[in-house]
Image 1: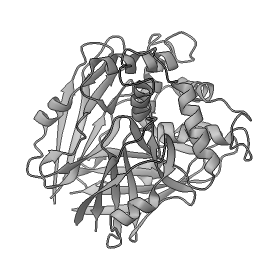
Image 2 (image 1 turned 180 degrees about the vertical axis):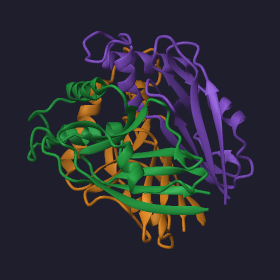
Image 3 (image 1 turned 90 degrees about the vertical axis):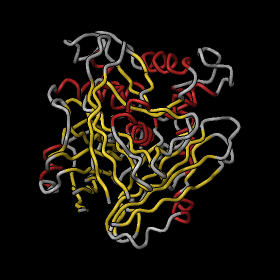
Length: 138
Length: 138
Length: 138
């Protein structure tokens, strides 16, 4: 049984949803794992990780618009000292989650044809985000 | 330490929420794992997996109605070429998620009394969905 | 490779969001795991687990207010025999999720500086909740 762990540091170009599958795969080598899983864990509370469509850029725009329509920016929160986008960012982080586990099969991520790994940046002014990658298997 | 992996192919009878615990357990044998986990990963971006009530059919109806009320069907999305239900399906897929990890104890899933595994089909015309099941433990 | 499993039983003081990181760490000893993961699984369908801000109590108040604003209490659900807070609790449980996997590095949870583990109690009258903790690694 193998266990390995790496850290991916990444900064989104702006608020929104971004496909990072290639960056994940260039950070950790899973080619020697025949059957296993890869866990991704984002160490932040105002961004999140998800799996969604890797093809149409429109989907990423809609993801941002729908989520910001459900949980609008504003001063109508108790926690608003850090800006109108801060508390909505915390909520979206819990709604989408910060931890994903993906199967590994024959040395590759066993994603569907249309699936990509997304970094969801919920703050207006992105900072560098750390994602811990832990692979298990044999 | 054991690792095993199987694929469950399943098609929902219609759009909505469906309990699939039995189908999962008949696809992968975890009876030889004393302590461990089972990861379920759905390889699609317009359906999702979740854990919820396994008893009352009313809960499944409400899950569909609440989620479709929060993220309504319509043409008011950038990504609408594939139908009015497509972009809402993508959003719900990320909101509920496609990856769940459940503990195994004494050769059985350690679910609560009222917990069942759900396949959430978010498209109007369901297609066959693939779920990768990976079990770890000893 | 090590695998260990413990159960944390915990009751929230009231409906809302509560940081339980210390209670998790006093229930399972991960100090002998150099590289690995800890999976937390809540065995209930009307509460949930998430990761969010561990510092500001305001964030926890807003999490409750935003989630209850999105999915309001009421009798307008098919499943309402168990109270006006029951069906909303089921939905929130699926929205936030009941399963989280966190990396372990050098015998400690590899959480971000501001991250805490939350128990989200969605019922008006809390009951004791069971969380299965499973640690893997070497």
